[in-house]
Amino acid sequence: MEGNADRTDGIYSIGAVARMLGVPAQTLRAWEERYQQIVPARSEGGQRLYSRDQVDQLSFIRNQIAQGLQPADAHRLLAQHHNEAASIPAEQHPNAQASVEAATTVLLAERDPYAAEFAEYFLRTEGYVVRIVLDPAAAAQILRHEPPSVLVVDLLISGGAGLALCRTARDNGPVPVLAVSAVDQRDQAFAAGAEAFLLKPLDPLQFVSTIRDLIGTSAFLRQAELRR
Image 1 (cartoon, rainbow, N blue to C red):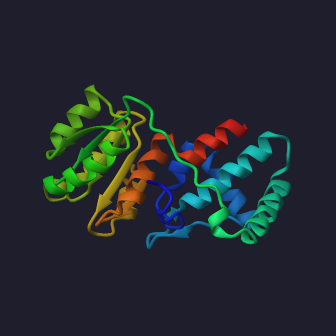
Image 2 (cartoon, one colour; image 1 turned 90 degrees about the horizontal axis):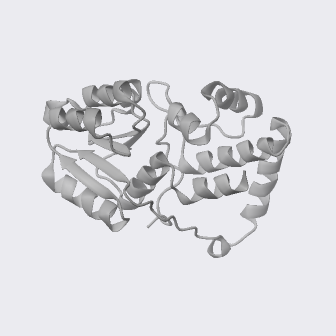
C-alpha cells in the first residue's frame, strides 16, 4: 500500500527522525545548516517537519558516514545519486514493499467511531493488531499497563483531550505517537510529545506508511539497516 503515498509532505518532528535513525537532533540541525541539502519544511510555529523522502536521504547519509565517509563527502554522494535518479524514468524505480512484524499493536484513541473503523480496516489489512478506545482515560490506562507499539491519537478526542494524552504517552515510556486532527495543531502536538502529525481526513496510504515508519518497519528504513 506504500507506493502512491505522498513522500514529500512534512510530517515528522526532528525528535522522531533522530530516534528512527539514531542520529542526534543537534547533528541533524548541523547538517542542515552546513550543507543546505536536506532542509525540512517549517510549521507556523517554527517546528522542523521532515518528509519521508528526507528521512530516506538522511538514512543514506548516516550509512555512508558509518562506512567511513566524511559528512561533506556523504552529502556530495547523495547529490550525485539525485542527479542520476533524475535521469531514470519513474516506472523503472524499484517499488519496495514492507512486511509487517507479527504482534505489532496500534492503539487508536479516536473521537469518531466511524473514523476509527476506517483506520482499523487499513491497519488490519497490513497485519497490525488494532485496539480502539474512544475515551482518553481508557487509552491512558492501556499506555501504563499494556503499552502498544504505537499510539494514534485524535487531538480533539473528548473535546480536546488529545494533547494531554500525548503528554501521558511521552511521560510513560518510549511509545511513538502519531497525532491526527481535523485542525492544524502540529506545533501543539510536537510540543506535547507527538513524533508525527497528519491532518484529517487521512490518506490511507500515507497513514499506514507513517505508522510503519514510527514503528521502524518501513521498507526504506529496513533496507537502510541492511546496508549498515
